[in-house]
Image: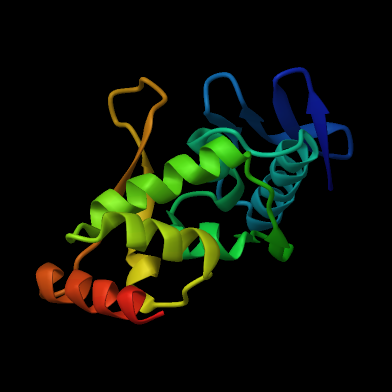
Length: 169
């Protein structure tokens, strides 16, 4: 089973027959999605194609690598889990990285936003709440990305704990 990039799509073939394909243009799959090995092979190839193009400049490519939920903690650590490979280092363009961290600062809130942005940018904080700030693709189909916080029981307490942690760094 091998994956090939053909034009704007990736095809997984076995014995010359296409089992599964993915179109970068439409963002849709065709074929047998229940074949786990084919899906892992396709995701691995898709990640290689995107990462070989240099620094990631938008959320759409970032979501394609991880396949769904990308947290700010992964952005800060510059490491992504990729199906079938494990964790891989990622490169983000400086503009996209700073935009994401500014958006995370807005989600975190508080009175000391510049201090929070500074800590997120230069200190590489490790906190459980940063794993709950996700990059989402717009549902309106306009290709935009935005950040959301997935709250547990008490979002205000959780974000307050994160702010206290960041202020103490």
